[in-house]
Length: 82
Image (cartoon, rainbow, N blue to C red; front, top):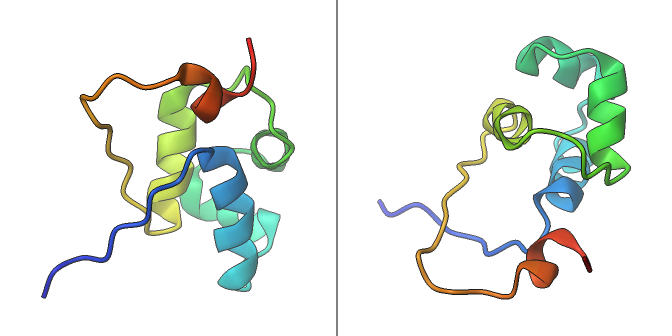
């Protein structure tokens, strides 16, 4: 069976949506991902100072695989306006 893929422009928004849809609290997610609640809160509030490896670890804790395309893209679509 093939995995279903979803294209997401902002993984920070996806984290909050997926956490809530799974009925997981921030505290429960912190235990699964290995970070404190403040870090999860910063991610969900769109703090762009979070390292990508931290975001990826939280996505993995939610069962989400992050992949990158090699195509050129407009970074502002993914990370907000510069």
